[in-house]
Image 1 (cartoon, rainbow, N blue to C red):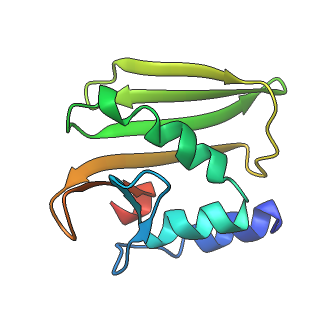
Image 2: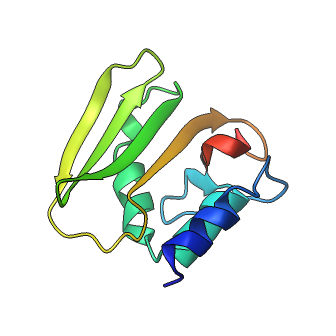
Amino acid sequence: MIAAQAIQARLKTFHGSQSYFECPNPNCLMSEGVNYLVQAAECNWLIDALTLQISKFGKRPAFLDLKKADNRWTLTITDVDGKVMVTEPISYCTFPLPEIKLIIEWSEQPRNAWVIYLPCEY
């Protein structure tokens, strides 16, 4: 796993995405920045947790927030109106950053699929 400071610095360099990467869920793709995050932070489980919830989105954009507070992790997914769709405590987590936000949106390009982005790529 790459150090948190190096990951945070690299994440800031992503703007837009030219390439998309497959997720375990065949109806989901990752942007370049999210693909980097998954590899650098070794957090495939985060993408798995998000893609398990896709059926609740109804083709509307959603926002994922993984946050650590008081040595406890919480995964929250909200819709575009700020309504909480999912809140899950994470009992064990080796995620190196104190927080990460991701955006997931239904897209017809490059194919009909959910695409997960970093906020700076959206």
